[in-house]
Image (cartoon, rainbow, N blue to C red; front, side, top):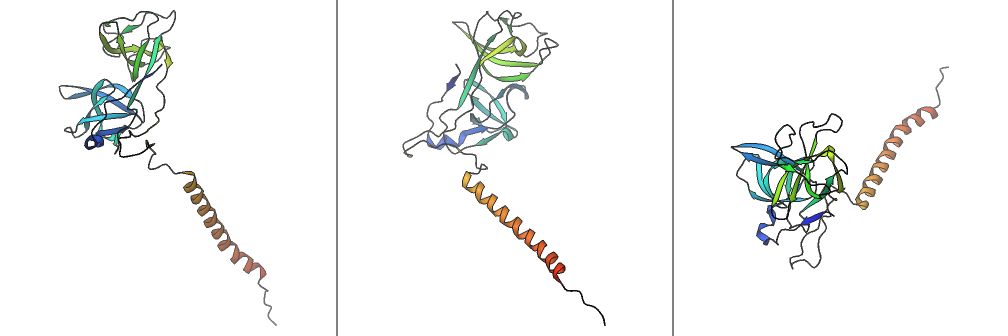
Length: 231
């Protein structure tokens, strides 16, 4: 079962710090000024922006991760979302080759350790890495593993695991802070409701009819005009 994580309720003045994740967004790590993709992030969930110093990236928190996202990959919202993040669940294929946890999505480097069989791992997203098997692709999952005492973060090769529970689509709602009597469901500002869609369709149909009539009337007039004969 996927798990969701809700950050403690923010004060109203900090609500603008939440930003909705747009398609094709990655969470980056930074080392000596170099940004490296860490994992993809699911669309329509939220990051908490913690710093805006860099001109190209925001420093953010997502679930229990900290990193950076490109400024162009998120859009600020004016509310605190109820569900801010989510993770999915996967595990090694039954009878598959040994599955190792790696510090980077690269099978040529020494792994951290062997993942025990039948172990469920929470994953945040995917990233492209090395081709560990010619028929199994280059997708790696960024996962969290708890051994009973310590928590580890790393990568497992996608060709050797199965997703038990994918990350579900988010239902975007605003936290009720007492100023609103009910939770507000987020709607994309560019999404048209049914009434407006029908109004636009009707206007287009009417406009098309006027264009047809405008073109048809000269043709009818020319056809009905009686030709004149010279005596």
